[in-house]
Length: 394
Image 1 (cartoon, rainbow, N blue to C red):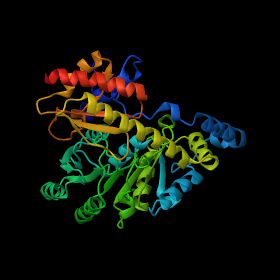
Image 2 (image 1 turned 60 degrees about the horizontal axis):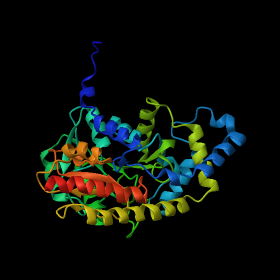
Image 3 (image 1 turned 180 degrees about the vertical axis):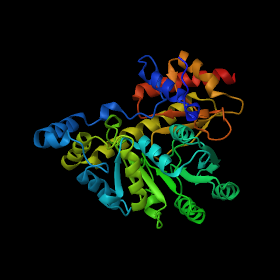
Image 4 (image 1 turned 180 degrees about the horizontal axis):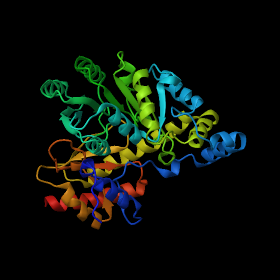
């Protein structure tokens, strides 16, 4: 069939994500590829009880259309949680969305025109790169080090590229590297964004999953001029299947985000929002998060220990203080994309690092997820992967 697609379709490359999800669905593969939470800790019974309570006590309301900005009591609970963590926030500052992936799309609708530039960490979240490319935008990769974006590189590139219209960052337990920005870097980024009058999109799906060290204030908590739009999600602390996240923004930005959402899906599910609202009222979310931290922190440590035993001596990795990922760098000349089929033959999978780069392809890196594998799978899978890597190096 001869169909003429829009130009932007050529920019939509979902092959890596699609193939990754296929690997995670194969029962014979130990997959460290997807960023999936551990299903055994999903609060199934508390959510079932919350759903039942909503349908018994407010079923007709739950099954009806609702406001585009979301259920008021849920937005207030989210705002209160942010206030407790030091971020000024009121219920009217919060918009409920269908996962933070929708937030990326709404922000792109709001801030970007075809041909604009998005400044981002290099490497960064590959699905965000796909969204920005889908809006026919170009990417401006910014160098990073152990403290976050290198501000000298950001300033130099902002000065040389007037087409930049948005800065996208994941400052806490960054995907894919697991790095966390220092407070100084966060303040420096805000100063540059204010100077160049650029909006900042802060993606924070992993911030609650800290296993060691002290919390660092999100950019939104440091923002005094309203330039930061913040995205949060229940996917990593409750369940990804409920597809529920939120955005926090200045009033004039939030109003436009609501309008953009009305033209896409009108609203997030009233029933799901009321179920989560009821769950939060009847259960201790913080206790659930503490359980996740204990489990994932243990799995992180086990994976690192297994890597020390099985990986080539020349391999290097970032030890994250939280989040879901380990970022591995191998010697120059190794190609983790080319090695993936060999790993799959050994019944183990990962994400090649090339998919996360906004600039030139870098072939010698890979990302591993430790949250969605049992302890036995971690030990076995890392041993298998180590054999593949070591055999390639000879």
